[in-house]
Length: 64
Image (cartoon, rainbow, N blue to C red):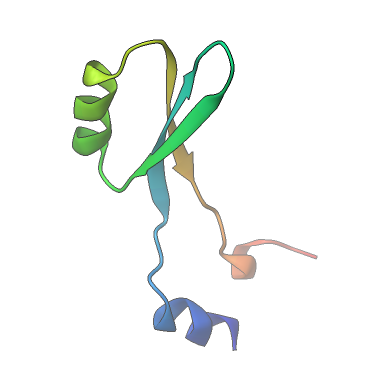
């Protein structure tokens, strides 16, 4: 059942996230490609972090 769900919905094994902090708040932006994220990162101002998020969701490799 689980494998069928993953095939039905759009599945991203990884994504790129930029977190921008300012004095009173923060914003988070998500990107599908490294190039798109790095281009946006260069244009943004303030205290910022670029992170690659990798999802591990292969339950057949994990022993319970």
